[in-house]
Image 1 (cartoon, rainbow, N blue to C red):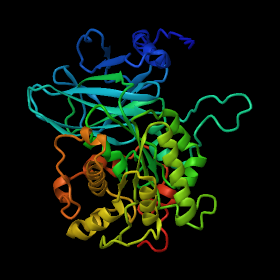
Image 2 (cartoon, rainbow, N blue to C red; image 1 turned 90 degrees about the horizontal axis):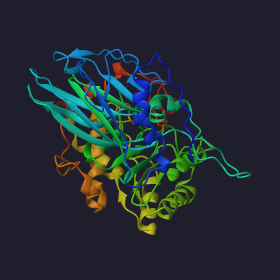
Image 3 (spheres, rainbow, N blue to C red; image 1 turned 45 degrees about the vertical axis):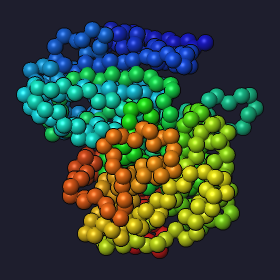
Image 4 (cartoon, one colour; image 1 turned 120 degrees about the horizontal axis):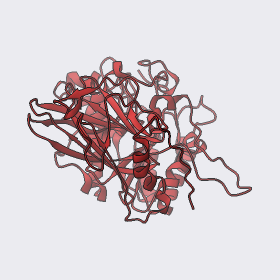
Length: 459
């Protein structure tokens, strides 16, 4: 039985109402598979809608309140009190237990056309440039995942730890690990009306395990395919991006990041594995895994653990590095891509050959080739977007059930015919000047000076 002790603080008049809605969420372990709980927030300046929590522009997030705007938000009442508006990106957060959530956002201005992008947690792209005409009100939904570092309490005398070992690189995506659902609104003229957050216990979850070329990034010049993948998936499936900078198959397991994934995994979920950038570093003695032996052995262990829980493992070969100036492929990674292909054949699991796709992309991008990667290793927003499209094509080509969740506006993508960077204009949605959590560059480098620990072979 869960015992919830609540102290009501009179200085926060909305707190009792919030807790009345939040308590079913906190008791999630007692809910049936069909039970749901919903938090509803109203961002208008007038009387609050029945059943909604009124959020004023002055509502700064406080843990004891459980919701509000993150520091730095510059918001105001808009559209004659009908909306909350801003010309700058801002983040609204709500305290929730870990799990999958369906989120519905309503926006629209009475007299102005608006274009709004929505991101969740540490920069995951959920909704891209939703255009709403003047006088229209539009609802858009997505499904996302919330997690904390905590693991289940260990039985007496059991060896192990009860929390994921976070490191200096986790400072670059702290919102992936807090006990809040973070929703970022990006618009030159925001017109936010309501947000509804509902528990969803049956949605399949796509777990991502990998290094800095996959991880979420909360602002900055490099943007991974892992944080852009949700944009191409319909509501009803959640992406839990647990990749982190500097990781190898060995270190990911040692830090209990794999255990965290397995603790949340259920039948019908997916585990996408992309490792190789750091695994090959013999100068990293505690985390190095050799291509033909330990690398393959670790891959097979991850695969077995996923299958044991009824999940579907999917192997993704690491994208190639490229010359920083010309964008020409380096044809690197030694025997690791082929070792992963061999494991996919031996274990009969789906493979997405992002390594081959990336080389084709670099060779075909023309004048945009130098714009695919930010530093020869990590993708820009443009490159991450194209890599995410490669992943979606891999989902379709492998005939995964996950393909049923691909959004309707996704057209088949051929890396031999990439999009034009100028037409996508994605970097403005991931402006380095909007960086909120700074922890240095990925994998111990300064921003823009390599990363994933570019080896001597990288340009």
